[in-house]
Length: 324
Ligand code: F6P
Image (cartoon, rainbow, N blue to C red; front, side, top):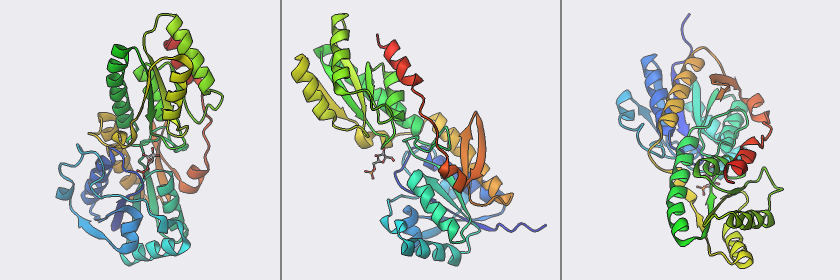
């Protein structure tokens, strides 16, 4: 039987994440190996709407896997949130004769892909965001690099915090989600972590913990705050005024979005990209690649976006015990 898939498009959308280039490389090379044509769309949905694209060959993705960011460029695209923008994007995908469009990005990008699927475009999502805030998958590309960056920053802050016998408050990214904060806290040895999923932990409890740890002989303190909680500067000021301990706040911000992707991000990125093309060729439509229980699966996009994972507080409890 003749293969109906002849040409696919690929774009990266929303916040960039280290490892996106490994996905691009894997999708382009697997597709070319299988005899497909690949169109690269620049700046995500913005580029699709404005018709900013180019043909991609295997050599176009040489030497990109080692680089952070995305070589296809990315953007947040407010127009894609409108019906008119979605229709324009779908129309261009049709003019381009795309048999499938691979969308690499986080929650907003996958919702953009879903909107296109309702307009007759066959889409395939690959989870790329440092936040790990997609409930349908246990891994999103970029998370490991971001956590390693956060952990290394905490190591450095700890050196100075120790020397001055201070308290350090470190704010990490993650949008409304606390996974980066939890992982950075555990691997960086924080005493307390404030995350949106755990609203019961407040500044009074943090101060109490700091005072208790000082009474046990700790000469410095480290508190991690997820950006979804925010106000890390305010928290630092409150800690200092109540306890008298000099306190400094550091907001890591976009530092965590860059950097050389770790092996984990290159591996997940490569495998997900490879398997996405295989699934597209098998005729699977409007899917998203996920990682669950050690396996890569492609799920129906609508069902995947509905899925809600329950927050498990055990990592937080572990952080508290390991920091005594
Ligand atoms: O989704 C990735 C992320 O880095 C979040 O952690 C953060 O809230 C957001 O993007 C920042 O977005 P922008 O780069 O558009 O300011």
